[in-house]
Structure formats: C-alpha cells, structure tokens
Image 1 (cartoon, helix red, strand yellow):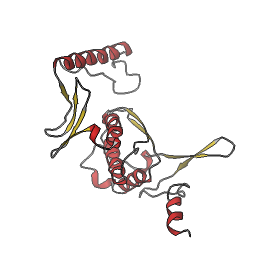
Image 2 (spheres, rainbow, N blue to C red):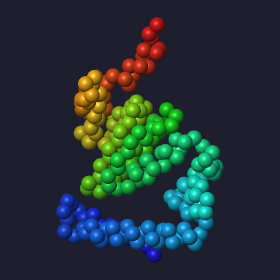
Image 3 (tube, one colour):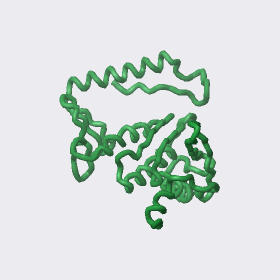
Image 4 (spheres, helix red, strand yellow):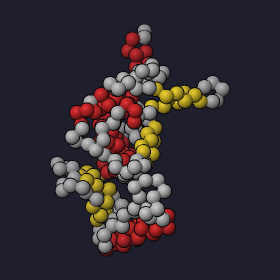
Length: 213
C-alpha cells in the first residue's frame, strides 16, 4: 500500500487540512504497514539512491551505512555517525526540526560539512511553517553557516529559497554567577559577518592556548 501523507493545509488553521484524529490515524497506518513489512523480510532499506544510504537488518537490529564505494556496519565506525543520523533524518522533514548539539563526536571537518547539510536542508524546505532550531557549541558549524550566508546568491538556481541574514537568529546564552542566564541576540550583517562581538568562549580559548605564555 502507498504511504499516507498528512495534509497540513496551505496556511494556519486551514479548514481543508486533516483533523488531528485523521492525521494520527494516517501515522498509525504507516507504522502498522512498516512493521508488518519488517516481519516478512530480513532487511529494510531506506536508500535514496542506488549504492548509498542506510540499511537496517531486522532480526539483528544492525545498521549498515553504505556509500558508493563501501559498506560499513555502524558498530565499526565512530559514534559520531550514529549520532548524526537522527539529525539528518530530522532535517529531511518539511516542518519543524529541533536539534541539540549535532556536532557530538564529529571531527571538525565533518562538523563543517554538517553545517552545509543543515543549510541546504533549510533552504529546500517548502512547508509554510518550516522552522529549524539548532543548539550548538560548535564554532565550525557557526562559521560554515556564516560562510554560506555570504555566498547565498550563488545558490539561487540550486535551492528553493537561499538563506538571508534576516532568516537567521543567533542567540547566545551566557550563564551568570547568580544562577541566572542572559540571552543575547548576535546580529548578522547581509554579508554574513557579526555586527556584535563574538561571544566569549568561542575563539577566545584558542587564542589563549596559542599566544599566551
């Protein structure tokens, strides 16, 4: 049977959208069909393209990540791969994505690459209520987002809606000695640079380790 898609409507409170009961009924039917299929076959493949993707072995629960050049069991790679799969799954959805510390256990270069993946997913979301909230301590992800903001005009033909400085809000949470936290918005300029000073603790510690005696 075909996948049952929920009709969210074209605008908030659209009377033509699915009611809550109808929406959850579709979700339940999709899961029922999915798990009945797992009982009938040993492997469930969610590959998007031939030769690459993620495969789940039903009897053992093993997850295999495949590229065009290799197949690796997720138990045999760094834990960062396992942590990043749910992140990518959330980003692939068309609505709201709430993501906490996607950089966990990832090499700095992969953190930057993840920043690219995050922006590309955001730029291709079509739902009217699409929203991505990202909590991170990674300067690599933040720098990549700022770099892609500067080059957004180059992606007009490749994405649905390139990001701009007005569509990004960077909030810095700074704990205080009295147990409270100050939340400050760091403004971005159209060319992807901070209008406000970089928050303490990002590049500060690196400079201290390099230049302090």
